[in-house]
Image (cartoon, rainbow, N blue to C red; front, side):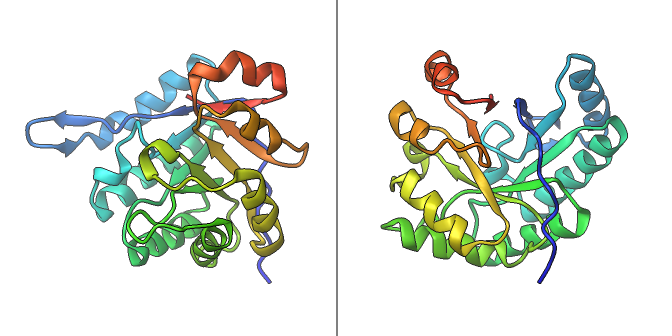
Length: 215
């Protein structure tokens, strides 16, 4: 059994953009990632999410997603930042490859969307999908990306997390991008990593006990 690397980050994580040299040609500007990371660190940001919604990860090719991950991995190691990488939103074979790539690099955690075409219809189906992804990065902490407005997968997060913790060895939490504060609050436990992704409920979420966000 693989030893899961510890994940300890709590607080504000920045969902970074994917930079381009020329948007008309859609050429990724890899060389700007290092100074981008340095600038964030100087502003007090200690963690980043790469290839998420803000980074348009689902619009990138497989090689582009791996390329941005590699550049951010180098920069985060250099500046002492935590790196989470969003690997979902693609065909399963590609998601599995991205999981293996993240595992081999040694990123701090991966975040994964659900299957977006044959959508999970209940909590158990969602756990099964995430478990199949997580097998490809057994040493890497895994979080689920709950964004029902975009994914159209809207199962109970408290029920899902309870099942996932029993069935997925390296599952550690979720990114919760939903306006349902009561459901999100029901997910909170001291050992879980629950990152809020909805700024419209930030004040209420802080009052309810949320201690981390990606926004």
